[in-house]
Structure formats: C-alpha cells, structure tokens
Length: 546
Image (cartoon, rainbow, N blue to C red; front, side, top):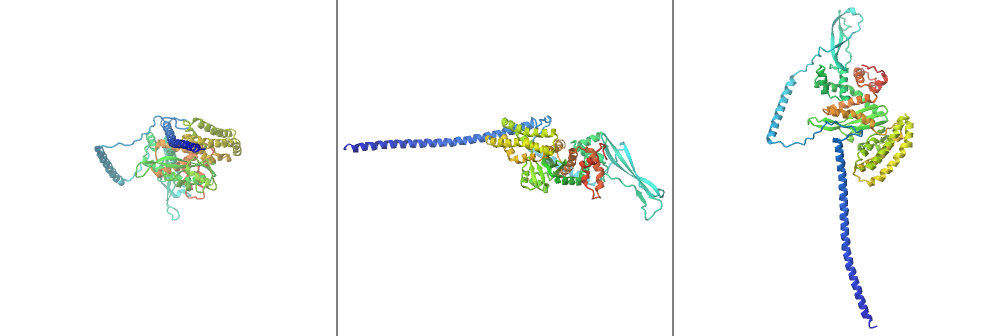
C-alpha cells in the first residue's frame, strides 16, 4: 500500500503530458483547418471570378461573331449575301487645328449670310408655273353641256386645261376642252354664260394627272426609287420636274388617301385575329439636321389580308400601342417584344407567339452550343413539318387544328421539359442560355397557335409586309421629318393592301385617284369600297380601270 501514492502521482503525470500533447495537436489542427477554410474561400472566389470571366468571354465572342456576320457574313436565315460594295463609315471626329477651326467658322458665317440673302430674294419672287412642253403628244378630251335650245346660244372660245399624264415609257398631255356658250338674248331666269363642267382631277390646283401621281408613288413605295432618281429618269425623257413640285404632290396625295387610311384602320381593328410588329425608319429631326431611329408600327388582319402602318412621332414606347389597340378584341400575334406582355391580363385578348423568332435565337446559338441548338432547331423543324403537311393536304381550319393537337402538341410538351432540364446546365448569359430562357418565358404564347386552325405558327406574314420599308431605307435612306414619315405610313398601308390581295399597284392607284372625289359630298357612301380588296372583288377582269 505504501507504493500506491507514488504510482498515482506517476499516472497523473502521464495523463497530464498526454493532455498537453493533445491540446497542442488540437491547436495545430485548428490553425490548419482555418488555413484550409481560407483556401476554400479563395478557391470559391477564384471559381466565381473564372465563371464570370467565362460568361463575359462567351458574351464577347457572341458579339464578335454577330458583328462578323453583319460585316462579312451571311445576314439572314436564308443566307443571302449582302452587297459587297456597300460600306458603312463611322466617323468619330478629329481635333481641328486652330487655323482650321477659324477657317471653318468663317465659311459657316459666309454660308449663313448667303442663305439669308437668298431667302430674302426668293421671298419676293412669285411662283410661275411653266407651260407643259409643246412636243408632248396631246390627247384631246371634249366636254359639252347639254342645251335645250342650242340655237339660242353662241359658242365662245372653250376653256382648256392641260393635265400631265404618264403611261409606261412616255409622257402625254390630257387636253381637257370645256366648251362654253353665251346666251344670245339675256334672260333673268337663265345664266348668260354656260361652261361644261370640269371633270374631277386628283389635285385641284395641279396639272399632275392620276397616272403620273400613281407612277411616282408606286415607283417610290413599291419599286423603291427615290424621287430624285425619278426626276433624273424623267429628265432623260425630256420632262423637267422640280423636287419641290414632286414633294408637294406627295404631300397632297397622302392627304387625299388619309380618310381611306383611317377607314382601313377601323376595319383592321374590327377583325378578331391580327399580327403586330415594328420596324425602324430614319427620320431627320427638324432644327438639328440629323437623323434619328424612329419606328413604324404595323398591324395585319390575317384573315382579311389587310395591312396598316402606324406612325406616332417615331416612338416605340408602350404609350403608342395602348391607344392603338385600346378597343381591340381577339387574337394578337407578336414577337417577343416586352410591351405586348401586358395583354396577357386583358380580357378578350389572346396573345400568340412567333416560332420563327425563337428559331432565329437558336440559329444564333449554333456557334456557342451546337448540340443543344441543333436539338432545339430539330424540334422546331418538326412543328413546321406539321404545317407543311397541312398545307399540302389542303386541310380546313378544323382539320388543321386537329392535326396540330395530334402531332404538334406532344412535341411541344416534350420540348418544354427539355427546356426545363437543360437550362440549369448552361451559362445563363450565354447565347444558348438566353435562347432557352426566352423560349420558356414565352412558351404559353408560342403553344397557343394549336388551338385554332386559323392561327399561324409565326409572324412571317407581317414580317413580309415590313420588307418594302427595309428596302426603301436602303434606297431613299430617310424621311425628311415626322410629317413625311406619317405620310409614308399612309402610302405604305394602301400599297401593302394591294400586295396582300395581289392587286396591280398602279391600276388600283389610278382608279382610286380618279374616283375618290365622288365620295366628297356623299357621306352615305363607305370609303371602304375604295380599298384594294373590295376593288378587286368588284373588278375581277384584268383590264385596268381608270
């Protein structure tokens, strides 16, 4: 028993040494763990930075690819080469030397002084209409007044008015000869002088005939020839027309079309299925002398084949579309533009999407993620194959709807699940990520077209209606001001209706100009009778009417 305390003391000492060793090891491990945690934080931070850099690199690569395609590559899904001679020069400006700046200021002052003098001189001048060239062929048109007792009258020299007309390849003058008579014996109950009435002409104070006005407007808004080129062409044919004269005719012609244009708007918005789109048009800002990107809105009544362009000071904002579609009820098919999303909440409006717009998104993603983009394009292609089958089999609307429910709808269900599964696996800001997200966010609008056989799978009909504006921009470049852009919208609308129902542009325009004044004082007549589709229904013969 005497050895027990010494043993306990030794045992306690051993335990203390082991505890001390364990404490030191524990402290060392804590320091190590802390270092590892800091390393993990740095690793996470580095990985996040690398991920963000990768997304940024992908985004920049996508932008570079897009710009390459714009500048050097194929510019559309149809792979049509742009004109290799067409160039765009961006001028950033250079610093002027003091001497150059001084010279420029002097020149500016001199030019402004010259302009002031010119304006003062011109203000005193009275415009003089030049007579039509004598060498132009004349077609006489005699107009007589019915007289009960012709022997009671003496015929006076007639009143003559010459109207410049145009037929393909040549000008001619329509010489209107209004025969005039004077009463031999004056009678209080009968006018002393009687003149044959003047037939209606499109522009009352102008010598421009319907055929010439039609030629000018169709050449510009259908054949995309700016007025200055037409002036050069006419000059080679021996007819000199000034730019100011033609611009005045353009304005007056647009004013003549405007009431029918507003009637067209009413008819389009009364239909129960329309497509909507917007396109840019450069417009010169008054007072600044620079062009700005403005917008034309376009509505198309699909079933009636009517086209309506709308211009509201060039704005593309929501404030334009709200009053434009305020009373509309029916299906509204658009691309993915945000302002149309509000119609999901409006009673009586059924928003539809555009699969061509989605297909374009995945086409742009091919260089980023070919496997996923190819799969998506293949599914979309299947949906279009169903439409081709319906077209080839000449199915009715009900039969087409049934075919879509049987074939298209299952594909759309499977495609939606693929979108949900694949989105977490891609970078959200990459082209494929954006394409998948955009498709899924609009999927309810995209899939509704299967509900009714009348509904189209895409907005291509209305995009085809926009093409004349795009071609026009390449040729006459801009509109002179907001009023000119609004006038252009009027003419584009009526020309678009002609194209939609396959009516000869020139024949319809001549008919309209020669008949519109018969509606001036008879308000019981409907201006809709003058619209191209109604004119075609009344005049099925191929003979042009005048």
